Amino acid sequence: MYDIPSGGGCFCPVQPPVCYGTGLTEEGEWMPSLEVISKEKNGFGDTYYYIRDQNGVTIQVYEGDLEAFMKKKGVLELKEGVSFLYPKKN
Image (cartoon, rainbow, N blue to C red; front, side):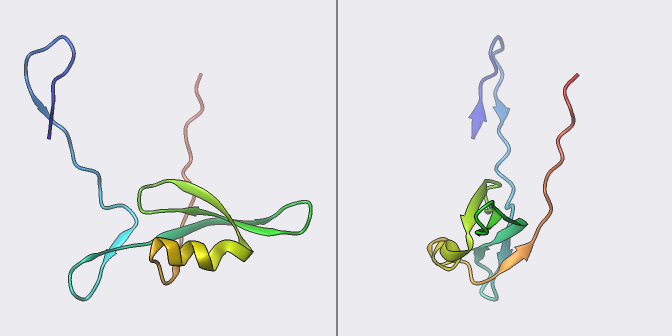
């Protein structure tokens, strides 16, 4: 893939997305994975998780919906992940 920068006439290669949050199966195919960022409870006592998918998107999933969510994404187990820290803007 190539991108034409504004104001210029040269082509710049666009880097493909990193295979983030995925792993190889024994057959050598990429398998999606999910990372648990945090586990919390709301004011009603419901447990929910912040989960990052293979595209880097963070999703809030309630404990009762977790199994269906994992099945929908095709993932058998959750990995332990860490949250991203972004620098403060001045």
